[in-house]
Image (cartoon, rainbow, N blue to C red; front, side):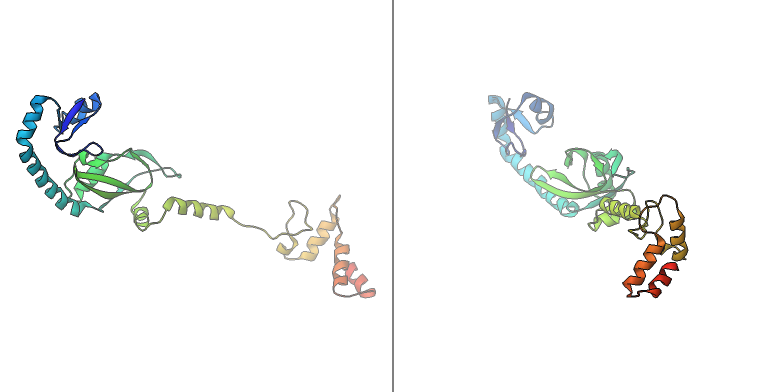
Length: 238
């Protein structure tokens, strides 16, 4: 369908342009919202007769929108929601939620001005476009968090979900015991016992144990210290 635009439409044109659009888009949105007229001879004459007035009114609305934009541009709304440990919301944040939060801050906006491609379904900070006029658009931030403390961290640029993951991983590492290369699988390292000599004797007494005996290990230690002969034998005998 060919239409005459009565205001600037993004990606279509500006006031007075004749453009072709899908019938459904024209019938369901542009024509009912009085953003366009059917492009026939009668409407062309009506438009040309009122062009000056339409352009003047549009310029006045643009000035008002620019003043409002100066106050709402960069605004941040905090929306507290419940979520899973992965950050997925139990529900979602909609256009209505954002509008209500902006109005609560004293901004004059409505649902048709907030451009949200899809509902917000995760924790985080999101840029949201607010079109105050066909030629005036600003950006606000929607800070979606599980608590005011988290929202404050996110406002400072902290990725709270990544931080929570790191904290959980650090806690999961837990306690790591000392490594003893001579210990059987499942045995406690001799360094962790109060009396390592008793631990060695106990390990030597275990049936079926492979590897050097406690006596052999004591002899090896004596040799490493340079003790030989009787001294080494006495060390081995314990």
